[in-house]
Length: 476
Image (cartoon, rainbow, N blue to C red; front, side, top):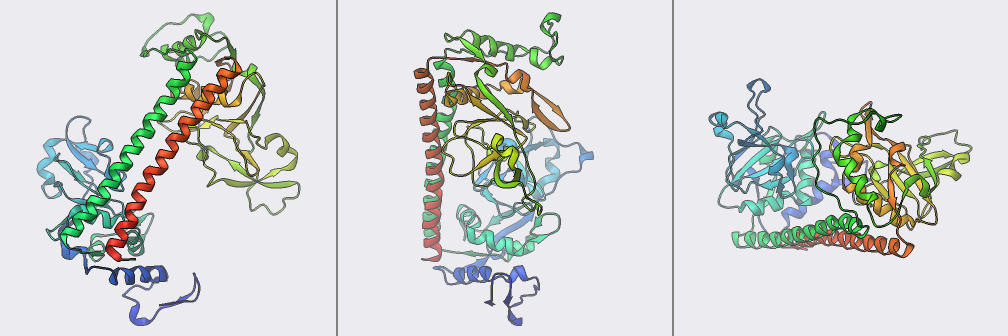
C-alpha cells in the first residue's frame, strides 16, 4: 500500500484481504503489522494459543436472577479498565442459577477483553470467586504456551488496540466478534521472557498504585486541614427520616424537607462556632456574575462578537483543578464580554449540572491566565472584596463541598440539578486575619500540587514500563 495523503491512497488488489472498506487498509495499520512481523519473536494468532474464546450473555430480565446479596459476580464491559476489573461495581446473580452458567463460569487466569463500546480494554480474572460475563466481553483462556498476564499486557498495548480498532464493525457502537479476535496476532517470546515482562509491568503497576494512594491520602487530608485550621468540628450525624420543624423557621423559605435535615443544620452550627467571626458569603463578594454561553463558533454573521474560549462544567474536577485542554470556543457579544471575561482571582461555581451521584457546587479558582476566557451559563463567577483572599474563600468553599453540604442546597428540574443560589450566598464564612487566610490557602495549594505531582509520576511509571516492554517484544 502506498499513501498519497491521509485520505487518499492506493491498495494493490492482492492486498485487499476480503475487505473493501478504506479504513481497514490505512497505512498506519500495515506499518504496525509489518513492525510486529519484524519483531524479536515469532507471532501466532490468538486462536492458535487458546483453549477457549467465548463471550458471555445477559440473563433475561424475566428470570429475576439478579440479587443485592451474596451471589455470582456478573462482570460487564463497563467493569473493565486497563489491567483492572472493578469487582465492586459488578452485579450479582443468585447462586441458584449456577447450573445455568457452567459453560460461562470464569477460572482464575482467564483473560477478559471488551468487544463492544470501548473495545480492546483487557484485564485478567485473578480471584477465586464464582463469576461470569456479559455478551460484550470475550473470555480468552490461553494454553500453557502463554502466560495469561503477559497476554493481557500485549492486549493492552497501543499496537494491539489499533489492530482491534481496525477490524471492528460499527453499527450503533463499535463491535468485534470472537472469530475476528481469534485471528489477531500476538508475539510469543519464551516463557522466561514473558515472565520477565510480567514482572516489569507488575512492578510499574505497584508503584503506580502506591503513588495514587499517596496522592489520594493527601487530597483527603486537605479539607480536614482547612476545617481544622478554622476550628470547625463536624460530628458524624445521621439524618432522621421523620422530624418536626417550627413554622417560623420555614417562613418565606423553601418548603422541601432536605434543607432542614440534621446534617446541613449541624454543618452551619459548626461553622458559626468557629473561633473566627463569620460573615455571610454575599457580604464578601464585590460582584456575582452569571455566565454566557454565546453563539456557535460557526456563526457567519459575527459582527459585534468575539471568538472566546468558554469554560464549562466538563473543565472541572472534584479537587479544584481546571482542565484547559478541551475548552469550547464560542462567539460572545462584545457588549457582554467586558462583564463576563475572567480575571485572575475569580472563583467559578458550578450552579447547574451535576449527576445522580454528584451534587452541583464544584468550585475552581482562576489563576495564571495565559489566554482570554469566559464561562458558560451553567457557572457563576464570584469576585471577592479585599477583606477576603480569593484563594482562601476558594479552599473554604471547596472544603464545604467535600462535606457534601451542596447536596442540601440543590433542587432538580427537567433532569438538571440546580444550586439554590439564594441559600448558597447565605452560607456563613469564617473570616480569620489575612495572614491566617494566606497560610491556609498556601498549604491547600502545596498539598494539591504534591498530589497532582504524584498522579503524574504514577502515570509515568506505567508509560516508562510500556516503552521498555515494547523494546523487549518488538525491538527498537
